[in-house]
Image 1: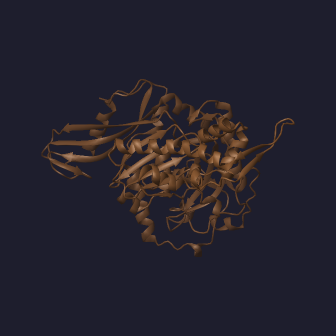
Image 2: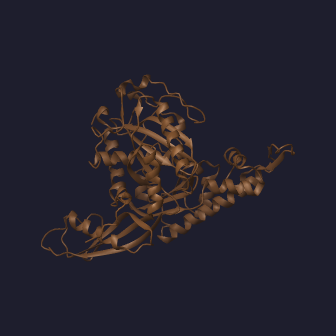
Image 3: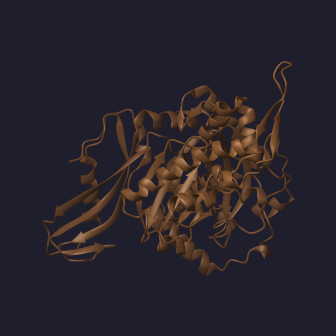
Length: 472
């Protein structure tokens, strides 16, 4: 497919501290050219849950407006939205089914019936099953079957990872997007979106834990043997660190955030004991001096608690010692100094920062190579998976489009307004800078396909106001 036939897909990451909108399109090498980026401070969202509809709508509108300002030829109508929040939960279950037509080989319909059976799983009142992910299958006495289609057998079973969420909390997110005059193409779990943007084939094979330290929650996705084994949402993240600094040192919230970003470190042993930060006094009071060492102790205490939760969740699936790929830290919280050393100390596993450059075309501005954009870029990757698998059609449906051909995009000037801290340089780079072979692009797309094809739930079915459909 040529560049001109590829749709423009927009990811919308609604977080506790920021709302980010990124528009991207694939080039002929299978890499993403970023066509626009907008970022706004988030309001009305707490720990991933919408608390104020009107404030959240304004934040979304600002992010979309700034994305369009970065490239005036963009027109944004449809978005892929990330979903997280402390209401997201997961559980493991087992399902088996006796086949009636044993003379015929196992087909896709048998698998679909087995998955449908899992919608009868008991979950708390008010929750809704979001996704049902088959992990490994069993056919009669043969265990650990990856794909049973085409095999013969009487009894087929599987282990399942079931993801649930509060129905009303999810509906509120979609309501905010709808009232921002946007169409929600799909809702995607944020840890899975982040995983798609920072993982490679070796990570999937070795086994990794993606830990996305955001503003309101820390999202976690664990992969082993190429299979999604576990997801979790830890209700502690950057906002909690800021609040700890504010309460512990007696400063304003904005001052606490600024100290965390500029002077914070996740390891108190690495902080300079002789360094102090001077905070202006309020209404004529004397300035306050803050020890950098004390600041580091406060940050380390909360970060260590987050990593203790990571270890807890890894032990739930008996993978605390078997993840040879270690931990990939991403999200805004991964920018803290010495955070990888603390993660390795607490978990006993190797750790590294995950940057969303696995799928980006070469030559983009450095500000995009930031772990805080992992979820948003992963949402674009999910959109392309849907498009290439035939689930979504963009052309002719009033979707996102541009008024001029892509080859003329290099001449467009980008002028992002304050306070968006983005280099105002156009994101499209000349084709000669692309060095990725088509063969590598196909392999990368296969990896993403394996990741997303396991998700059998339909997010958008959650938002009908009718009663839940009964499974026959």
